[in-house]
Length: 474
Image 1 (cartoon, rainbow, N blue to C red):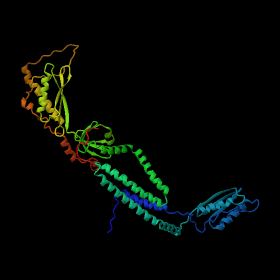
Image 2: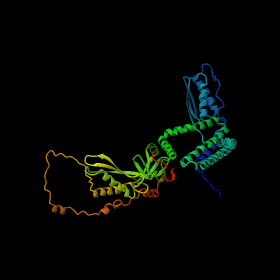
Image 3: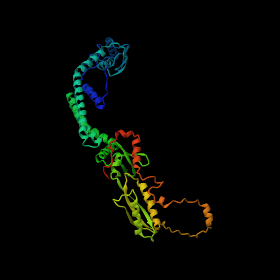
Image 4: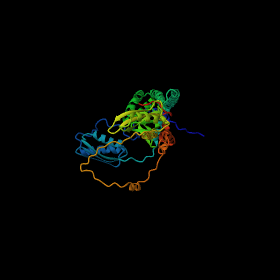
């Protein structure tokens, strides 16, 4: 049982089509006259048909009508002449006979003009002789270009297989040297295409189409320029994807920030870079925009620094507040000792002395939001236990019309209206993790798990290698 196998790519279809078209183009086309039957006019009259000096209209009409009737090509037929103008009426089978009658009249003596009203009505003919003649000519031409077609097919198939072998060899050699699969594929195609073009050039040369061969080879670059101008945005994104795969500022699974977008890298294809945000949404960013933007890679260095500000009253000791803050930071399990935390006086405000608290933590294991919440809660408790006030900002309000007075209810009435506040122990306030913070683990693990479970149409075309951390910031 025979099995037909479809070519795996367009090279196969293109090779078969090119070989067949080249055979037809190279076949000699002999000059052929329009086939005519035995009744067709052999030639036009070479000179005027003389009748008699000073011929009358009736003589011209009789002479032309006798000639046309003798040919037996016109039925019915009516010839009339007025003031040297010949009028033809009747029917014939071919356009050549109609024109022959007109030329005959023009070459007749004393004819001024011809009004040809002969209608062409082709008869239904079952004569297949012209058809067989045309088939014979086609067979003759097929016998001529059959050897050329076989040779062309052999050459195009040979160079097509050679180009595929070149591409496969290139991929094997560059796979170990280039980390980007996109660059490997582009390099393989760039080396395979010239091999196929050489085979096409040889076929054109064998067929005697030298100019066409030069045009094909020279027009390849022109077509590329035209396509590049027509698809500038697509070309820009494709080129950006190549450069990104070369620079490799991030890998699949890295936590990065591109402009205003932050998330886990899922995919880099020929058009876009796909991020999974902290909200669980997929964002597709054009590669041209990614290449021109500032890319922050949080996964390149697991240690991250965070900060927050706390304000104390002017009557309190700044040094004591700094010691309490540093002690609280060092006691926290998520804060790193190297680099060491710091508490720096940042600003002397209108009502508070603002202290900037900076600390380092393992961003791969802990969440920046949860760790900062835990530290701010513990610092507040430590300052309050030491008697250091955290005053609110002072605002000056002017009442131009005076201050309205209202009666304040008694404490007994207030106790009845206000709900009781649940009391929390100092141990609960100073705990490392509260119920609102849950735990200190980073959301990156959960996002990566969701990224692995998500179904992306572009997942098969990912140009990134899995891993984390190639560069820091670009």
